[in-house]
Structures are given as structure tokens and as C-alpha cells.
Image (cartoon, rainbow, N blue to C red; front, side):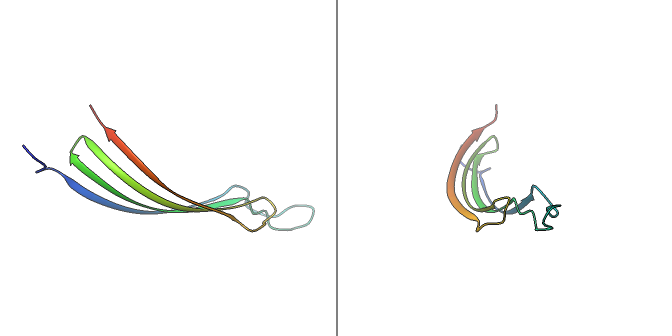
Length: 83
């Protein structure tokens, strides 16, 4: 018994969240407060009930006043098994 049922998956995802759509009532300036994230993933299922997953993400967050966005990125590794 080996890895006859194993498979690889590739995923790409883009998320965007706008927490405060619209404009400030007092100044009519844009309410920014948003987050954007791009992520990719590579996963391997050596068995139908087990998955090893490696992710990379890049994220920008703009504050309420619209200042330059903070940029973060990272790597994530996960292992899951279902029984």
C-alpha cells in the first residue's frame, strides 16, 4: 500500500474587505478602512483523509483616514487529518 490515492492541489485567492464604505459626513472625505489579501497555496493529500498545506499571503491594510497601507506577508504550514 503506497500513495496511489495521493494528489496535489494549487489554490489562488484574492480577498477585499471594505469596513466603512462611503464618505465622512462632516468633510465628505473617503472613509478608507479596508483590507486586501492575495494568497496562494500548495497542498498534498497523501491519503484522502490527510492534508499537508503550505500557504503564502501578502496583505495590505489601510486605516480609517486613508494613510499609506501597512503591508504584511507570511508563510503558513498546516497539517489536518480527519477521522
